[in-house]
Length: 286
Image (cartoon, rainbow, N blue to C red; front, side, top):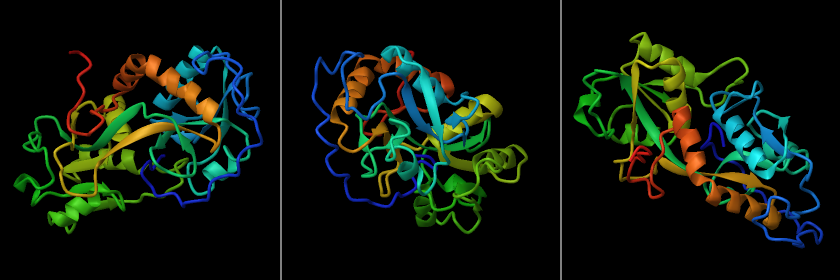
């Protein structure tokens, strides 16, 4: 859920949606009946039109490409309902049945029914290639003690920075902005390129693709060594309406059968992929 890890308000679960979960064929079959509320004519995706590099109205984000892959497997065209990923996103899209799936949603939030996760990633330290910080793996490393580090205010790594005395010299960037006009992540990496900060910390699926596309002179270091809370890795799922168990199972089956292809799509986009327990960086070449 973009700013991805921003807290969503808990809502009580929806009432059981009629009696529309009868299965007339295997859930694994792309033609299997799902709930009457799920379109059988298109893969209807709820998405933010200005959340580059994840989703964008020109459909160049990696979540757009993932939606294309899912639509291809289901033999359905992809249709979008665009809405900013902010307060009211689920209420004004998925819950009012304008669309049937959110491609990227953090595991465990009650606003949606989560599929099985298809992605585990982590916050990353980003530094110039060849920098004397290129060997840093933890925010407790003394090499960071006198450096100015960019951080999105209110995100989990800020707590680690505070614990290690790094906040005083840090440069904060806003979490909540109108992303049609502002991109804190891109601004942060531009400041890093200009030497205004010494390092940047970003959510991996945000920072990794931006570095690959626009800042190839930088290095992305997944922060998988941190042991104290809050955790810095998260499992990302697809989100469907509460009660849509048949649709959830159909997507679960699709994810399971196509995980290797999904992994390759994400890795090609620059997303740092890690193990489910957050302890190892995945190497798809081995």
